[in-house]
Length: 115
Length: 112
Image (tube, rainbow over all chains, first blue to last red; front, top):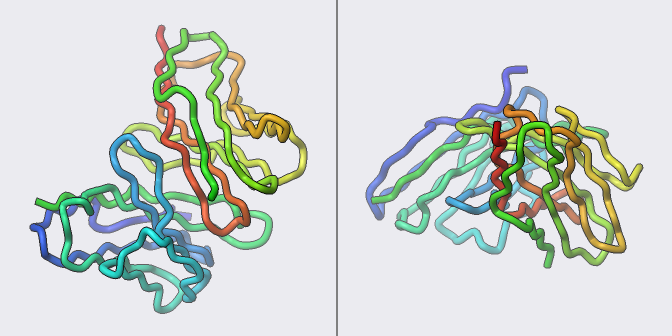
């Protein structure tokens, strides 16, 4: 169990550019979540996958955001045409099934700065 | 809509004193409830969870929380604060176990 990893840890980009983040969940965890956290706030739910299926997506998630989990293992979160308001910490979490389904393990996050 | 309110964005306690971090939720049905801790430069870590079993839930590091349906509360307590408890604490609620809603967090400072 090596924990949830995220790459990159930091990303600085110019407004209008596209960025992609990667999350590697704990091996064999079938649920994967993406959150966004801004300064002074708690994590805000963006979307989650069960295996490769994206089951729920926040209404707050604009069309510029897309997430994939093609083989039910790692996931990517892409933000197109970034805006300054996208600057935040993007968190990934995973959980296993059955009795431990509700126990999310969080990665260290990717800090995005849009200039 | 689900929401979580954490009263007090900053709480300071003396080492050895009682820790009490408050959390109230809004939900039409008893939800799943959680407390997470975030140490500086680390990811969030689950402290404890309530899933409709015992109303008093014991977690890691000596923390516990009590679910009170009549008060829609899930306050976190620890009898004796330790310096290592200094961190950010987040309360979270999930109505169905799918989407999770977090509070704005409480920063705990432990004074030696």
